[in-house]
Length: 198
Ligand SMILES: [Zn+2]
Image 1 (tube, rainbow, N blue to C red):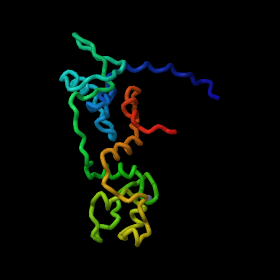
Image 2 (image 1 turned 90 degrees about the horizontal axis):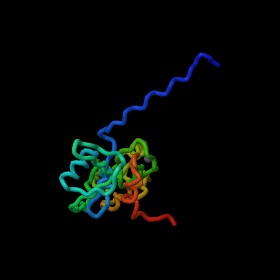
Image 3 (image 1 turned 180 degrees about the vertical axis):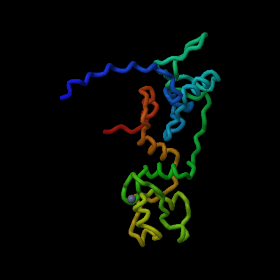
Image 4 (image 1 turned 30 degrees about the horizontal axis):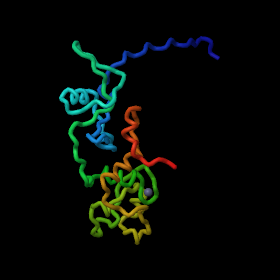
């Protein structure tokens, strides 16, 4: 036992500051669904306030925190909705991110979630194309093992036949990966139409 150790007094609480990254606003379309689920459509509080003053959005819910100017005080919006409906695109772009999202960020051969890369079912050297129905998420070890072989040759079959996903499909998958920060006021808009557990 060390009798000379004295507990240190607690450090003074830091002055709360409005970090640019703090107090994000969830952005809903005019139909009150999030503009995007994954990544979740969020604006910085500065952009949200700006949009309020430009009358592009309605405030749906607020944080307790307010910002003040000499002439007015406004609570930081935690949820805003666009006044004009933005039509979501029907076909998601063929991007690396969206392929991972379709495949739920897991290797389609072994289910691993680490060290993900892409595998061409029919290898490019064998005439396979880089398209929705020939590219799957795969971990590096599986990718290496499959090498230059077709699924039949390697006896490695993906857990689901690759396909071109709809926007709704990607939204559904995106909700499986909620962001680290979820304000209470967002939950009604993120999960109100998900299926309930029996
Ligand atoms: Zn794998």
